[in-house]
Length: 318
Image (cartoon, rainbow, N blue to C red):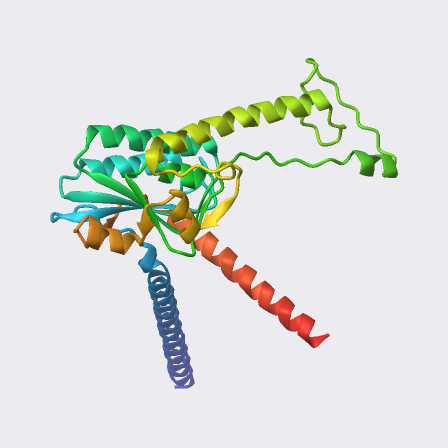
């Protein structure tokens, strides 16, 4: 009898322990499901925020089946590694000119300039495509800034428009450098450089410049400048009112640029599409920027702004 009671008690304890363990396992599973659910909701929420953050920059579809104006952005520095590279702009131009529903093209320019090589490649491509497709007009719409290499691209268009307060021109060439010779003398540093070729080190900032090398650099820059000037004359033709300063590197506001013949009138991309091309619907043909690059750029700007605000608050507190 005692053994039976003991055995029954043992079975009861085991069943109770099993129930407790099963309930514990079920509870863990429920907790895991809730964790997965909340993580999924967080991911969806972040994706929603990112979409709303970036969707306004996403390019419109190029498969438009009705008449429209093609928009190509030339924004920021003109460089082979940047968004405004010759390769990107060339691809956009070819896509626009090939579409039979494109009634005109607008280059929306907002750039301080950049590589003269990249700019001239775009310039030559525009001139070539204009010859192949004479029925499709191309216009440049300068926003805040259309200077140097950006203006060179603009003069390849049939006409240039800007705002009265836009900055236009800067027809010149520059090369930046520094000289550390006197600093090295003061701290007692000796420069040791071994080269083959008399002028191989002539751009070295740690060596003093020589008159004959400075003259050589200025001659080379002058030749590049002359090509720039000839391209502007070619693009603007008799519309350009030349003055002694027009090719000096100065830039002008839109009002003065119009008087000098650097631009043809006032207006933005929307004005050109509606009033000149008569195709108000615009489709953006600009190659899209990689999403990761956009995130990095946006975060970089946000962090920079936050740092600036923090520094400003700190200075106010002093």
